[in-house]
Length: 373
Image 1 (cartoon, one colour):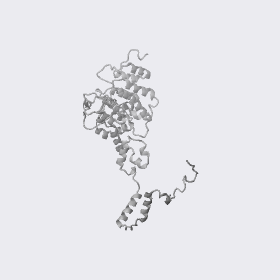
Image 2 (cartoon, one colour; image 1 turned 45 degrees about the horizontal axis):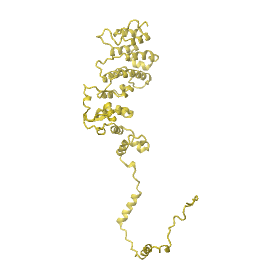
Image 3 (tube, helix red, strand yellow; image 1 turned 60 degrees about the vertical axis):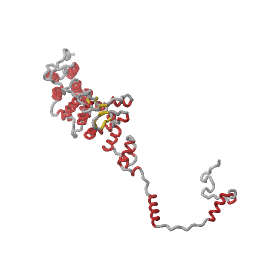
Image 4 (cartoon, one colour; image 1 turned 120 degrees about the vertical axis):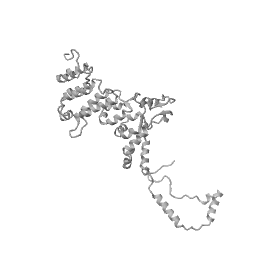
């Protein structure tokens, strides 16, 4: 071991060519004979370099100085496919402007990723016997990803045409747990028939009730694959969100918060729940409507936003229209829903005699002593 001095090489004259003295070669006849042969060898004349070889050398020189190939030299389709196989790595398109332009989340790129991630692969789970219509089979986890679910909502007229089935959640869960019986036939065709009970709408539709207003056509198409089994878990929250939208909407924007859109959205909810009568069978939506208009938004009912919503009608006339459309049955003398104790308790708190008269005219009958409790 030695010591290294700062600024000096660790060994002397490292660039000097070290040649051993001749007397050290005498010990080895092979080394000495090798040098003797080199001294006695005749020198061959230089060969003339042809023009072709000059060109080839110049071309070779140019090739050596050519810019090296990088990932950016690949076709955009290949780069996008690499991005897809990386399972949507979010940091890739922030490398530089080139990758940002190639991997910007466009419809074509996102749709490729969606098919790559959410197409059902029967061989992956060992399912060899499957009966399905022609088209793509999509796994239910698609609805759990906000980006791809929003893609489906915005481009449903394109994507839903390519989807023949949504794999039921129960089957997919059993396949992941290894509990699915692969010896039986997976019959997806029978699940799409009218006489077969469909699977419930995904949870995202219960959480984001605004979808029933903003993407009604998509909801109607998805209703071919699912059924809304708990419509009243959607209607009341939807009404609350709708009135919040009325209060917050801008004065100069074209609004969807109108009476017609409200009724059309409720009709859609009843449609995808496969309601036969198209009537409400719960008093909760009416109770929610009355509570919002007579308590929550009582101070803003006369603002411009609500005046545009009521369309030159009063609050009372709107509620009457709502009752006639969704609760009134002319064949009944006494309407059981409108005679519910909860609605009459709310009417007593409102203390609006005209509203009470409307409910009575539509078949509501209060129980004895409710109004005087």
